[in-house]
Image 1: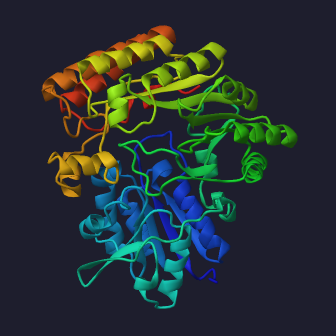
Image 2: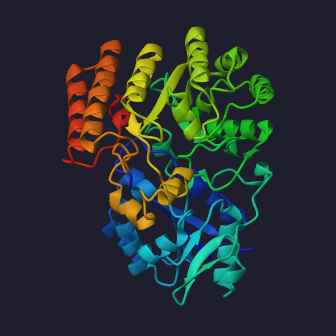
Image 3: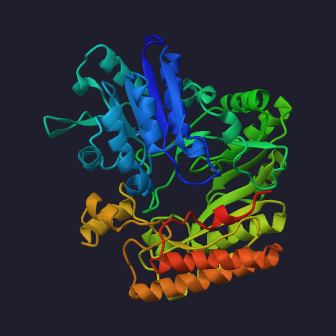
Length: 477
C-alpha cells in the first residue's frame, strides 16, 4: 500500500528515569505501518534523554508524513505540552497525531491545548494505516474512523474504529526500530539474574471488570492464542536473548484452562522463562498458583486496593476483603512467588481506619520482593471516578484536573472527612512505617530508607513534585 518514501516518526517522550519499558503501543502501530510498506523511525527520548532542542534539530533535518506521540495523563503538563510546542514549530507538512490513554478520553481539550492535528482514539493499528493513506492521497479526514480533529475551529469526531477481535492478526511489535539493547537491560524483574534480559509482552487486551479508577476505553477482554504468544517468546529469546518477561495484561490470570494450555505449550517449546503477571483475587486458586509456579512465575501483581468491603463495593471492584485475604494466604503458603500488594486510599468510603487496616495487611503478608507504599487514588480522565466527581461538583473537567494534578503520590481531590494536612500526616506516618519495615526485612541500607522517607516528606510538604515513586529507589539485582 505504501512505499519507503512514506516516513513516520514515533516520539517516545522522556519519563526522567532509567528503568524504562518499551512503549508497546507505538511498537504495534509501527508494525502495522511497516506491514503495509511504510518507513518508520522511533525517537527515544526516554532512554537517551534527548532534549526538545535536539528533537527540533532532528525534525528540521528530516521529512515525515506523520509524527506520532502517545502519552498518559500524568505526563501531560510535565512533559507533553512543551514537547508539542516543539513538534508544531518544526513538523513542516507532517500531521502531528496524539494517542494513548491520556488524550483518548478528552480529545477536544487535548487538541485545543496542544495544537496537534489529530487525536487517535483508543486502539489505533487500523486507524494509523488509514491516516497515512489519507495523508498521502489528500483524502478526507472525516472518512477516517477513530479520530478527532478541529475543522476551522469546530470539533469533529469520526466515531470508533472497528476493534480488532482476532489479536493474532496484529503483527508482532516492530522491535527493530527501537534500541533493544537498552529496553532489554534497563529494568530487572524479580529473581532475574544479572546475565539475564527482560522484556514485556501483552497477551490480551482489556479486562473482565472495570474498577472506578480504571480508564480503559474498550469493554471486555480479547485474547491472543497461546501459539501466537509462544511464537513471540521464541523470537524475543533467539533475537534478543530475552528469557524474563513482564506480562503487562490488565488480567493475565483469568482462566485455569488457558493457564493449563500455556503450561503445556511452554513445555513443548522447550523454553524456560521467568515472568511477572497480573491477577484478580476472585479468580486465583491453589491449582492456578501451582501452574504459574511451574511455568516460571516469579511475581504476581494483585489489585487488592482496599481492606474494606464498603470501599471495594463503591469502587466496583467486584471482589471482597475476604477474597483478598484468601489470595494472600494461597500465594504466601505456596512460597516462591512474590506478590505486588497494591492498595489505594482516599477512594469513596475511605477513612483513617481503612488506611491502617491496609498497612496491617501489607505487613502481615509481605514477601518483601518489592517495596510497597500507599498512594491516594487519582481520578484520571476517562475513569468512572473522574466522571462521578464531576457530577458531585468536586471536579470541573480536564482543565481543572490538570491544574490540580502534580504527582500520582499526591491527593488530587479529598474524598474523605479528613483535613488535607491530616491526610498527608497519615500518609507520611504509614509509608515511613512500610519503608522501614521493608528495609529491616531485606538488610537494606538504613540511610537509603531515611532518604526515601525524606523524599515523601518533601513531596507531601509541597517542596517537590519530581518524585518517581518508592519502587524506583529499590536497588536492582
